[in-house]
Length: 288
Image 1 (cartoon, helix red, strand yellow):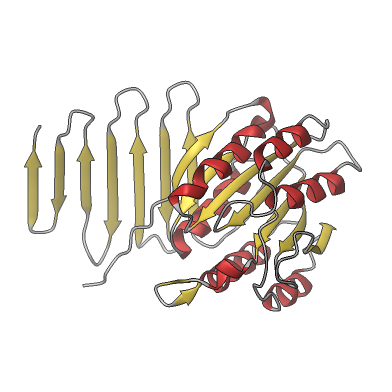
Image 2 (cartoon, rainbow, N blue to C red):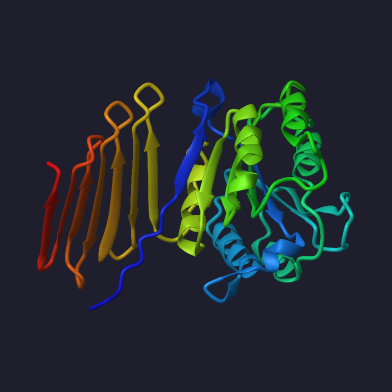
């Protein structure tokens, strides 16, 4: 029987604003290449997982949206100014970007606020809406007031949202990252593996109106008035899919996993504590 790994993307902060309803014309991805990205998940360096996700994003990028790629912490240790736009905002040269991504080697600090400021400076040249997606495994280690710095940038008049993806982030770092995302009307997602990172990056783009093919089918729908969230992930061949439904009003959650080889799995959890689990050979009913 094929083993199926379910990767969870937790969207912690969401500000549904008019900005998110508009279609973005430009995007910048900021990649954390600080020393901590050499840490491993299941024997694979986080930077290698992130590179793979970026390569996937670039290969699936559509020509109707301009893309820029920025990296920090990859050239010098202890330098908060080590920020580089490895690919300027514009039409995507896929082979060039992928080559530059392959050369990234983690070394230094985590200047998140400074990187967002540099991204905003690049976006000032026109009035098109933009989405800035930050992939980081920790909080800003250069600015003690990073969230306040980003709030000030938001008041500069540049039309952007910053979606922050926390990749294997410690509990103590999450508050600052969530604050940065919320300050711009963006999302803060917590992910812990490659599948989760792929989902979060794809959702950051798609929820901002950017058409991109990141491989498997990924759809995320969130209702601002009810707090509902629906997530659906399926492979291209239709052999399997995962559906997660969370209800904001009553706290219920339903998970459905469909797999042609392993069989179907259903998990229902209610706000009152009831749990139902149904899978091949197992039927559990507690508290309902």
